[in-house]
Image (cartoon, rainbow over all chains, first blue to last red):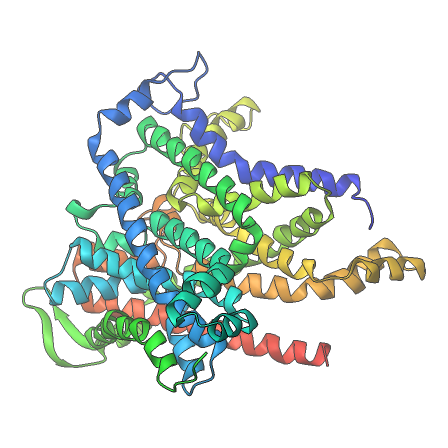
Length: 264
Length: 285
């Protein structure tokens, strides 16, 4: 392998600076002690972090997002795992069509999903409900869970399962003790990717969420559309730090590059 | 395992039913809604019509918005390919632990909400932002410099939001390259540049092309970044549809824009895929 030349390293440095610059900017502004947007040139202040506590609607929205992402990621995995096992390991007519149908939300812009759900829910009287929002998120994230489950179920030999069956294990025991452990990395990675995708989703949720079911990205978007102040920077910094923590866990367990090959 | 013929359908059934009811029906309803006229006094008019499509396709206002959106998508895709592909190559050449660290730095932002990442650029671009300070500090100008509500600003922010997809896509295809093929070329007397052009680039091409599709599709339908950086003054398709739905309340017109966006997206993705397949089936035969 060749070594990298100086031009490559300079390019790399500029690229990394470009990636980090806006995030560092958000973090820097969040520590200002002034009442308006500015860099903390005369000392760091936690004023805008204390201000988060005075805005319980952001905290409510945060927990709404966590709860929503938890429920929808779990349902998405429950749908995706059996489907992935069937698609990856059995031959049946309509298999390709079913697989394409369950992956189709990846091809649909979130905006289109958002307006479709807005109209559908207001028609059947479910507009602005948590159930409707969760169902919409399940549709959106199932493809991610399905892809990672498919990746780990494809080409899985069934020797171990046959052995267990021969030795008298019930089908359920075989699934729980043999199949599931074998595909677990894909299932767990799919759950986490689904969780994060749901947690971050804005474009579809902005149509579906009501004031009572506002997620954190929706709440933040509406705030930014009105005014950009240091409060939104401090909230964003908290999110950056939390996401960074999740990212380290994901990378430990699964490898970030593998997760994102699934995401694209 | 038993080979009962019903089992696969029982396993995929819950997903298919859920999707049919909650994806199929809403999408169909949106399409049907786009075939109704809208009256500002009485609301949605019964009776089928193509008037919305005629309006959107014939109106120079919408031509401008669709043109801007797909122009933006093309520009962002090209820039992402130009900077993302070399960066993926550099990452693949770094040795650990630097490789793992920088992979985390470059891909990590994908996990951070688009709202947060766009906010960072809004802070740079705003009238009292860093951009103004730098420009005034260097003596270029005394007036505030702002990239808010500009095409340039949207382009920079979207490149930042989407370039990790290009990096990961190229990275994945570079992982499949046998490094010995480059060494072989060098041993046989090829220059470094020739190796890059004749050995590495062709093998990275599938990654660049699939990354391009992802970036293009995501830019064409992006909402958050154009809404925050572009605002009302720089409307794109997604923000225009948002305004029709939630400000003007002309849902049939909004549905028409959404259907056209979906249609354009699918046509571009499918035809691009066909093109790439045809090209590469020749290369890899």
